[in-house]
Image 1 (cartoon, rainbow, N blue to C red):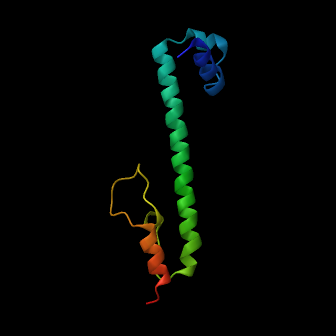
Image 2: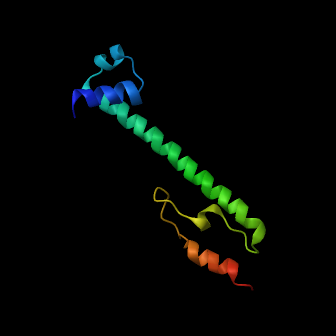
Image 3: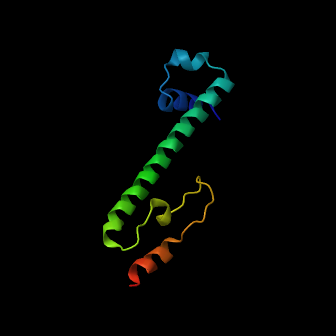
Length: 97
């Protein structure tokens, strides 16, 4: 990694002032970047979970059996539970009882 790339990340992504950036050790800079990436990942997870929730509340008025958000999709970061296949759920919806 070049110094220009470090400055781009420190001044751009971390929004540090030049004085603060130049005072960091490489370990501190690495920790700050990892913290930023974890924050971004948490935000993206939240957005995906919100989308899944909205899909479930949109579908539920139109089906006989209540569908939970986890019935529609199980994300990789969630515990490996009995994950439902989205296609099988659609088949259940389409098949009248």
